[in-house]
Image (cartoon, rainbow, N blue to C red; front, side, top):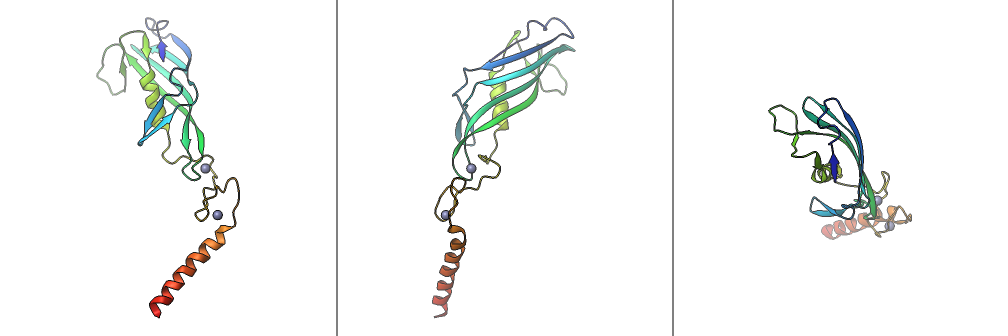
Amino acid sequence: MELNIAGISKNEGFVERFEITDVSNQHATIRFCGEDLEILSPIKVTGSAVNYEGKIKAEVHITTKVARTCSRCLERFEEDIRVDTVFIFVKEARDDNEDFYVIKSDKIDITELVLGEIAGEIVMKPLCKSDCKGLCPVCGKNRNADDCQCEGHAVDSRLQALSKLLDKDNG
Ligand SMILES: [Zn+2]
Ligand SMILES: [Zn+2]
């Protein structure tokens, strides 16, 4: 993934819009909490870069989809990733409080930066949908697809087991 700033790098105040569609990382995996998550769609990076005060400030919007497993129902689904962030590039390291990346040419390889932003947006306990009903703890059925009749019985049978245990102790 390359961001080319040749059109603005020599001209203070110049702005350049960019729209990058990266297919080379589609199907690549991102390491996240011990899992390798597949990138399912091309990574789109859009935004604009401005040359000001000797820096290149790029406001970027990143979108893609990542393969996930729902933490409740264990079904596979596509997690939508959307990140808005700012990258600041400088030609020489500077001593100020801003986070910046030192660049050597006008063609900036932003692959690692973008993959890092995607990894930072991945959620810990993903849900296929916000109201996912999960798996029935008794019969294991996916309750999104099919309502089972276990709910009441589950509690009953546990109580029965408990009362049997208590009976035994008393006897
Ligand atoms: Zn789910
Ligand atoms: Zn059930």
